[in-house]
Figure 1 (cartoon, rainbow, N blue to C red):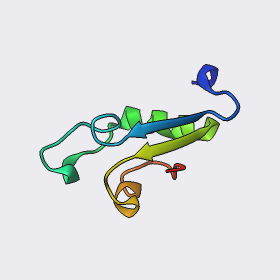
Figure 2 (figure 1 turned 135 degrees about the vertical axis):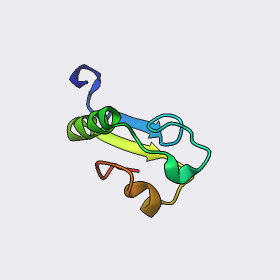
Figure 3 (figure 1 turned 45 degrees about the vertical axis):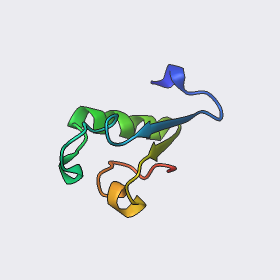
Length: 69
C-alpha cells in the first residue's frame, strides 16, 4: 500500500458495492474483516474518503476508521 501513497494523495471508495457487497437490505452490507483491515491500514498512511448515499452517522458505524469523508 505504501507504494501508492504520495503527497496529497486521496483514496476515495464507495461503501456499497466496493468496500462492502451490495445487499438487498442495506443494513446487511458489511465489510469483510480483510477489507476492514486494509482500509484501516491505508487510513494510517494517507487520506481516505468514503463516498456514499448513506448518512455520515450511518456509515461511520460501519467503518473501522474515521475517514476524511
